[in-house]
Length: 353
Image 1 (cartoon, one colour):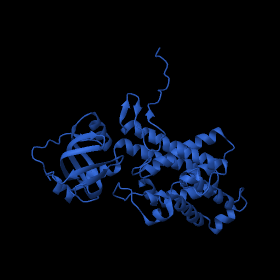
Image 2 (cartoon, one colour; image 1 turned 45 degrees about the vertical axis):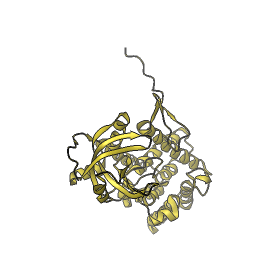
Image 3 (cartoon, helix red, strand yellow; image 1 turned 90 degrees about the vertical axis):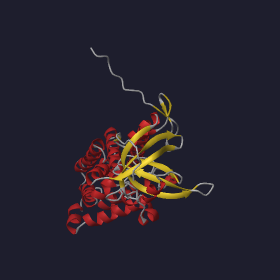
Image 4 (spheres, one colour; image 1 turned 180 degrees about the vertical axis):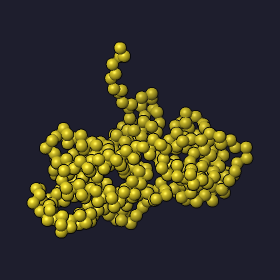
């Protein structure tokens, strides 16, 4: 597809950069994205239009293409899952991004790899998060929980590292599950440091496993950004799936040799498994949010709040980065937060001598 006379010399590093520049005024250029969904809809008067949803490693965007636009036929031919460089005149409105003079081309193999792995900064963040997870596992003293956690990271690394942590609320991007899990483990570890009577190994294992069912509920394809739907995820939900994952891995590590070696350990292995399952089952904190049971142990309470802290702080980060500025220090609220977000007070810095 080509639009005569179109100047696509400007390239945006990401959808976030494009949105930020469009919010400042009309802008023109290209961005590397993947088409995750193409819907044909109709207006109130019965005229067809396209709704195209795109994603990159950190964000998503949706644009409408009206049937009277000369680029409508070519956009209709774009295939879901295609990795493309989209060029357009971009403007930001109260309804989101709008695009005119749309043009696109397929990405080269090297460009597609760059798109899938994200920018250097995001790759570094997710790599560090995975390494932190492994370090926390390596610091565990309970051999049963350590073995169980290693089994997860060894058997499901690829699926875990590409899954999103949610569809919309927080860490809703490819690799988001790794970022969120590491964040929950960091928060939980800090809380356990303040309250030494808390079973740190149990809380860290709960942090690793609490959302592992999202590998199937909000997983991403090997070569895609779209958060996929699965029959298992829909029928059971991630809490139930996470419990099933723990039980299956537990059976795998509890060989006859290991059972004999762990026989005299206190607390008993069956108690360890049961308490870990309780952390997973109760981590949403209240029945209304999908937990089948409320937290009934100190460790379960710690995990619930560590999970909520990491999720809410990510929501604040996204609001500061992407939401509409209502005033110099105020950003429009994001669903999941209680109100509009106010920029935080900077940390105190003493005057230079």
